Image 1 (spheres, one colour):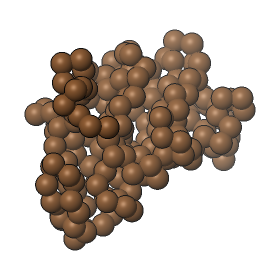
Image 2 (tube, one colour):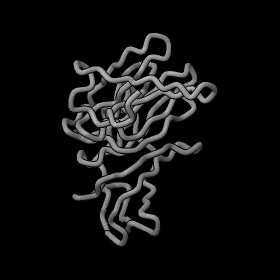
Image 3 (tube, rainbow, N blue to C red):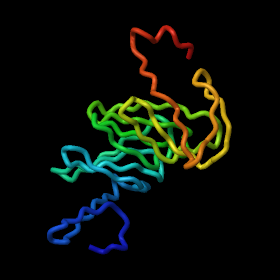
Length: 174
């Protein structure tokens, strides 16, 4: 393989052989940034170029793109939790996103303030979602969550995500 060809490579640690996963049809304009695998060994990546969560099927090599609900959101970095959900920062979308790899559905939460540019996101074992911004010292108000200042390490604990369902939807004013 020619390492000057951009794309996603799989490398055998035993043989050193590489395999390029790139399709002009599927990957046009896509800029993979963060990569990780699931329990079935499928590869998942975030598309910092535009707005996709991508999957490369471990058995077939097929590339599938899932566009985020927010157009041109530029998902940058993220993590997969134990339930197979990908949590990620939408750098240009001013949101934290979650993609459930089992249901293939997204949820998004707006971040407080303009120019927040969430860089990364992850869920902890207590159900909180953590994100990083490049605005140390920036103060903002997050509605009912209260007021916050971006702290050392560019991090802010926003609190747990809100799930809307039949039992609680009436209490929200959209």
